[in-house]
Amino acid sequence: MTQLLYMETFGCQMNERDSEIMAQLLGEHSYVQTDTPEQADVVVVNTCSIRGKAAHKAYSCFGRYKKLKEKHHDFILAVTGCVAQQDGAALLERMPYIDIVMGPQSIYALPSLVAAFRRDRKPLVATDLSAEFIIPPFLPNLAEGPAHKRFITIMQGCDNFCTYCVVPYTRGREISRSFADILAEATHLVEQGVKEITLIGQNVNSYGKKGDAAQHKSFPELLRAVAGIDGLKRLRFTTSHPKDLSEDLMRCFAEIPVLCPHFHLPVQSGSNSILKQMNRKYTIESYLDKVARLREYRPDIALTTDIIVGFPGETDDDFAATMQIMETVQYHGAYSFKYSDRPNAKAADFPGKVAEEVKTGRLARLQARQEEIALAFKQAEIGKAVEVMVEGASKAPANQWSGRTGTNQIVNFSCERKLVPGELLVVEIEGACQNSLRGKMI
Ligand code: SAH
Ligand code: SF4
Ligand code: F3S
Image 1: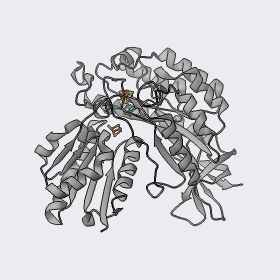
Image 2: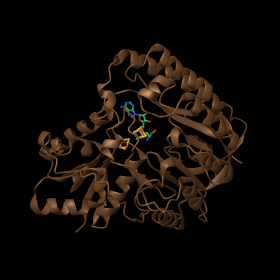
Image 3: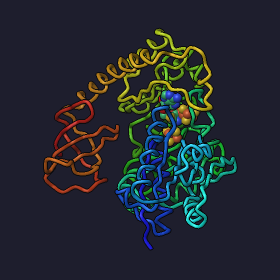
Image 4: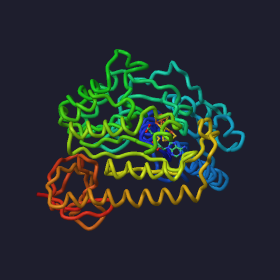
């Protein structure tokens, strides 16, 4: 009998891909996704714990499902992802209406956990972070997720232990997937019509160093192999740790035509003493050197970054150094955050916590300047003809379409013809605003 599944996903691309996998696994057991939680037999909330705010979002979401269970009907509530891993059995004690608590390494066990709960009606916790964990071979079903572009998880976990970060505790030790499994998955996707693939992991630059990929293939070798799949139009990857960015990887940007000219290279801070406190293991000088090398290999490369303001001990001078790095590098985009304490992360015990209003002020200044820089990049595109991959039709008006450049900028454009997502075409850019470009097809 068909059962209805409702999923809610927070957090990063790793979590998005995990949600697709869970939906597919339950799909193989007669579960069909629904948009209305009121009708669901199983609700899965895939949570994120990266910052205090993200975890709060998850907790308030649980509260909504509690009410729904009381008011409406009983369903199985499974909490997965990084909050589930972090809080484990404590979640069940605090929120007895949760039925299953399951960490990121256990996603492949979801159908058996749901079946066991149905049978025994006893709450279940699966949060074992075993170092022997192997990511099983898995071919994606195109029904779960967009048809023209997909993520492939190439590794799991993180060994870097940046002092602010919860990920090494929620995703466990770094493990690379088998080279052959990734290639099989990528080939399968392209054969199904997928045009763009993004390889994802917390630190893709150290791919192949640990785990099942220990056929000793490196990340550049993986990129070249995936790029060689006939029919693939665009290849991307994220995220990279600057300390592990090799010359070989930089060279890929000059040598692999389908590799998009976009690099997300989180800097976190412009101050060497803060970087040291963060345990980032690079200096601003070495970071800038890599930025320069990347631009030599691929002059049109768009750089984006992550920045934390208000890390413990951050002075006005440290923050000024971060503002300076924005000027020096000129990022196409930046995700910036106020530092928040995370469970188990070392910096939670560091002295010199920065007052909330100081963090707020710094973040606002940083974001205002970054918006100007990003807008200037967009304005510089006006008059140019750029290659765009079609994403879909805009809601209104008619004949308006939306797509992305290789540099990952959104382009809204007009075209009379009916387009297919994944199609590549050339658009003349006529205007720019903060979040997108606009133009017409030529
Ligand atoms: N693996 C990636 C990032 C994963 S988390 C990397 O190494 O870059 C995404 C971003 O969240 C981080 O780059 C960082 O900028 C931010 N972040 C992580 N922990 C945080 C915390 N405790 N407070 C504020 N921002 C945080
Ligand atoms: Fe977190 Fe650092 Fe690992 Fe990124 S590299 S996931 S910021 S510990
Ligand atoms: Fe969030 Fe976990 Fe991803 S904490 S950012 S869902 S790895």
